[in-house]
Length: 369
Picture 1: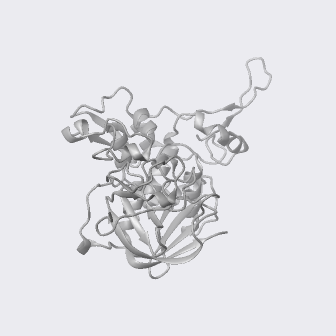
Picture 2 (picture 1 turned 135 degrees about the vertical axis):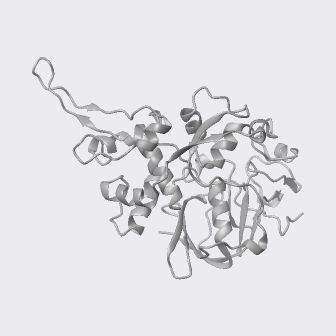
Picture 3 (picture 1 turned 45 degrees about the horizontal axis):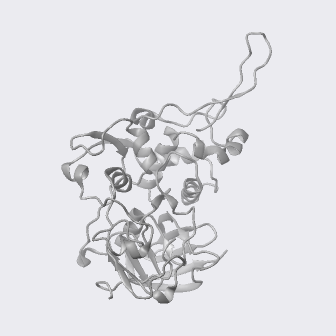
């Protein structure tokens, strides 16, 4: 079967700040510099977070900070980084799932934003970049949200099985619980949802929680007459090396930056140029046995129903190269961190954003180096 208006058949299924404190010991001998831990993570701490002046104890560019990056996954989210990620998201220089950590997606988005502002490329939050970020919005970075009855009770899918053949037996590829849904709606990691709301029941209507103050992701199907929205995207650049997608208007202005998973050594993304043929919101997925995906034993075509946990997520942007597209993903926190199998994979909220603005026939260029 072919989806309406067509059915995607993607060959590519799937894909702190630190500070050093120096102080004299009571004995008169010097103490070793201690690493400052981020303040406790609360909505108030995020909204009040600011970058200290150089030398005042909280900067991102110190040697100790750079040496610490490898251990960042073991540390708690930093309110300052949460705030910076929210500001980047609002400015459409998306840092991936907002998690309060200094991962590659955040640092690359920060650098892209700096260049767009006429500043030197850099992956640390300098005072100059911070000033530009703060100038983009004066609204709180974290806000309150009260769960509705639909948020609390779903419907939710009990479990998404790992095998595609088993997924085809499900009537829906929806969310599995409120935390997963809320994280995606507000562009957050699931861990950050929990960290900002310790002990709060996410399955109870009326619960007020703290969430990133971004434009919430919808799951509706926009009407064709309302697309594309402004600013219209006339050109897309897919950079295989830096693992990102950049969207440009007709006058060459960069209007959005997205982290991406782009192909793999086994099944690389295409090279050269192509164009956008069309867009499908909330598509289902058809598996063709000629793709011979690893772990799929079925020798017949089958269909996996639509939903955020569908193999291509909530959006399929069809390219003129047969069976290739730009699409969403059921695993937003892995975007930019793992390989795909040929296609270009974005978070569902980023795929929906690009699909809402891209024009039919938009030029797509693949950059190899």
